[in-house]
Image (cartoon, rainbow, N blue to C red; front, side, top):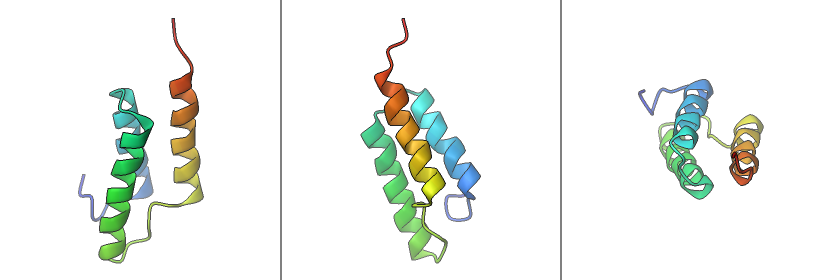
Length: 68
């Protein structure tokens, strides 16, 4: 994925991959922040769209649920 020209759907796929690799919520939000900085630097809209925020919040909720 070209991180400079990626769409929000590409970002969501990348964040989901990190979640599926059992990365911590704080790690995933760190990736999002770094991508946001790059995108804003090159003039793309930031990654702080409401949908992305809700998506990340669902990771936090799902990571609290213990699966037997």
